Image (cartoon, rainbow, N blue to C red; front, side, top):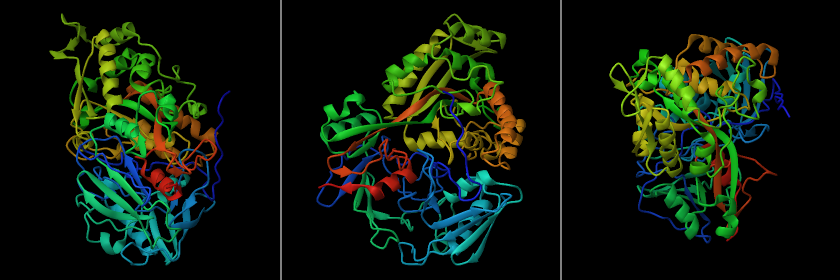
Length: 562
């Protein structure tokens, strides 16, 4: 059955939500040494994100090394659920409408909300936040280029020069910061140690091994029944799995052995999987922006694409929880109707084709050396793949891909580092390959993935901090098509498809991100001590502990059973 596109109202945005830029980065940077302990008596939930490395205090929501707070402390105007098509949930905004031609978005703000230091929230904070984004390109990951004006204390308007329906989800889902605090903060450099927000939680105790969020007793909404969240620092995914086994962790989004039998192996726990994140081998692809190495040759990227045995990779690294991926980066199968008829290969091949990989390389002038590895102009086809220490599934994936690539004459070498180091390498462009995932946008539509990760406006020269486009991809035809899509209503299929055709054919040809698989994001959580987790019947948020906006919504809805 061919999926159909969802319709969207042009006023009152009816869309699925997102892990939005800046909020969308992986949540925390844990370390070793504290397994945590949970207490039903004080309603403490112990959460672990699966990352390794000591926490370094930083609650700046615009920093790539921020360790948390988005959603739970810093709220947006609305919560946008990326797990299913649904209306936006009012937060600091209560109503929102577009004018007929999509140039003016009007938002009504919540009365009575206060910042956690007691100051009142109003339209001045919203205006300040978006003007700061516009005036600071390096943190403007949503590409906000409109004007924001205060009508009165509870009303603002966002005005754009051209129709901008597609910008609505990003505007509505961006965090708001307090003007009275942030007017003295450099959002590009400063570390925020005492975050002030309007959210349901505030920062409690901080230590390098763990920190806590505590329920905000002055929250404008109902004070959460879950009173304390303890974010623990461990050594990686194996430690997370061990914590589930020992009953010392309540929520872990990551791999555990025999995940299909979680409730049997770990009584009181259940596992839940959603497919959203498109796993890639990202490349520093652009020579003109300073990238160096064999991966800057598109032939190398295509050869590696065909060298992968995705069926074997899924089995060995992901316990058969991953799914197909399209080289167009339209999420398959839910977005198959967006895939261009001009693209012959709709999904990445399941099996390796070493002969095709060799043919591609040899046509590009690469020759196999005595050691079985290709070389060109004195350069061996050896590539380092950056990965975070402790990410056991990704580390296993790299080991598996290295064996597969070797059969095609390509050498892959895993390079492990802390989450902070890995993030710095990606954002600065000091890498050859990095295993990572591309996240979905605020509507079930590939436009957002294209704008986040393939728009040249979201990147920078090597050595400078990039936006989401850390592959440093730049293609004017793609940029023009993305910009054209930004002016069209989400439901105007006939006008939009030619632009998707342009983007997708270019991405298949250039392949700055090598498609691997669509990851099945699996959370394991404690159902004995906490109820009202997301389910197939009520998928009210994307169930990943590191998806900050979503996890914040989940924390607010959980009901402790102790």
